Amino acid sequence: MLKERDGGIVRRVRLVDESGAEVGPVCRFLGHLSDRGLSPNTWCAYAYDLKYLFMFLARDGLEWQDFRAPDASRLLGFLRRQPSRRPAQRLGLTVVVGGTELPGSLLSPATVNRILAAVSSFYDWAMVAEEYDGENSPMQVRPDPALARVPDRHLPFMGRASRQQPVRRTVTVKQPRRLPRPMDEATIEGFIASLKKLRDLAMFVLMLDGGLRPGEVLSVHLADLSYGRRRVTIRKRDDHPGGARGKSRSERVVDLHDPRTLDAVSRYVMHERLLESASPFLFLIGGNGSRRLEPVGYDAVVRLFARRMAKLGVRTSETTPHALRHTHATAMWEGGMRELALQKRLGHASPESTKVYTRVSDEAVLADYTRALESNR
Picture: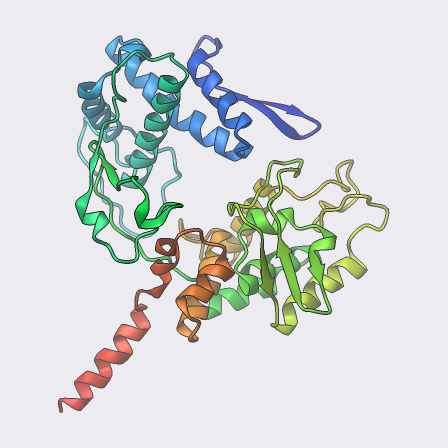
């Protein structure tokens, strides 16, 4: 996969084969995603996932136009045996999966399903673009009556009057519905205390106290802050040089009444943010380097967070910058915030995304269990 940049901005993403030649259909599909206004990170994710499709096709000697529904089942088997490239977490004992034929760490069910979804989107585009002559998409779907009976299911634009019916892909992997893992108080306190720069403190408390996504924080402009009303407006933008974008399609206002939040942002703006910068973005790289006036990129935030977690000795696969948003959402729900209000604060388009925080936490289950046990004695 190759990224073409212009002044730090990703302008184009290409998928190439082992000889360096472009994989034409995928590159055209990525161009279509660009035309739709999707972020460069999304282009990269699709290119990475579609790489597995063409690895499978090369193994079986198939052309991509010859891929049919029976091949989708074999693709699933192929993906279930692919090694994961994620660095293993060395936490105590290690369980080796499989044997001599299978590697110790395989692609997770969530990753496999994401790849299958990318393949499905790719063939949907190919049919519309008339580059695939199959009568139906090889990634077949079937009606899902069970999903239709879910009372709080997210409805299409026309509500129940719409002819759109809930469907599910035929080829998929069962995966557990995992709860978000908020960071514990001791880890949060240690992390906040470890931050040396005012910029870093301001960025991360916006995620922790406002529930903002990392891409939303990086996309904030100075003009989006309202100190008097103690709030920040999250706007839909695609002008970040590093490609950082918010996920939500609609703008929203996030109130910031925790005193430390706007105080941290104000101290950064007043004492550390470079005065000579004409950039509208709030968070700049800073320092003395040639890129000091450019906005902070997503990769820099991830690396900074990982280094802090590693130094504290608590780095795991769940401890990512996004965990700060999970921590905020969980705290708001346990503090009594209503589900609809939490959905609006987090900028979720669907109530299903918010419901993950409304499941009773482990601590709440323990408290109820303890009360029930005492009442029966």
